[in-house]
Amino acid sequence: MMTEKTTRKQRSEADLFFSKYAMLFVLLGIIVVSGFINPAFLTGQNLLNILKQVSATGILALGMTFVIISGGVDLSLGAIMSICGIIGVGLIPSVGIVPAIVCAIAAGFGFGALNGWFVSLTGGTMGSSFIVTFGMSTVIGSAALSITNGALVHAIDYPGYMVVGQGSWGIVPIAVVIFAAFVLLSWHLLNKTSFGRYTYCLGVNDEATRLSGVNVLKTRVMIYAVAGMMAAVGAILLTSRVRSASPVQGDGYELDAIAVVVLGGSRMGGGAGSAEKTLIGVIVFGVLTNALNVLGVSSFQQMIVKGVIILVAVLIALRTVKVENELLAKAT
Image (cartoon, rainbow, N blue to C red; front, side, top):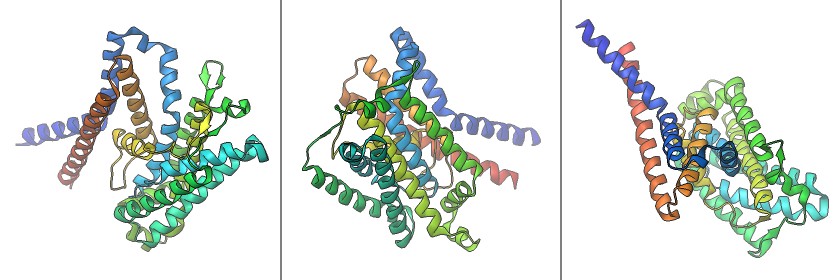
């Protein structure tokens, strides 16, 4: 009898291990297969290009990670990205490059804080965050269109601005360095600060968090403000790389960010997730996109492949929760 229990426990622990690190195995599989079919895929330059291309999405996904861990979702980050890109490029003739970037980041922080305030007023649930941020997305997106009359704002005349998204330090793109810095910052905030601990607590049980003396309103406002700020930084990287800002430039990026967070293994519903998991999701997303391009897969077929992988990631996450609960039940 004891042998059977031991065997079941070992099997559950093995299931948990493979569930937790499934995306790493998927990543390795994509790299091996793509490298075998096309050796150019494995060159250092191509891998750096992949990281450069996903840096804006990656920083946006890091901001989304905070929101999802807290038990919410932010559908306005794409619109915030669009309007902050317009602010960043549009203000350069008036105030200069650095002040314009600072204004764009401050605007992203402000929009995020407003999101957090409204979400808190409406209950702070996943459902309320969905509705509130969807509404904010419409408002902010419409404002971006009104400011520009639907036209592009060109950055090609500002080489000092474009260096952020196109320049390099040695062989490493500046965008990759900035992305890496935000990964480290996010890891520190989530793991080494009281703000990070409160973020996880909100995702587990916001009422218990409030009763324990945590200022839930302030924490949630800061969570969404951090997400908005990171959306603004992503906008700076994107607009400086493509040399222009558009009022619809960020459309769909919020969905990519959610997909990346889920791919990394963070749990929709809150209470679980990490910056390193999101990093894995970003790399899987970027490598998969690049691999499909290298293999000549059409954009329509790419959406099918990505959708299937996201669904598999959700099933793996559900399996992980089930196994963790089984192990916990056996331990007690």
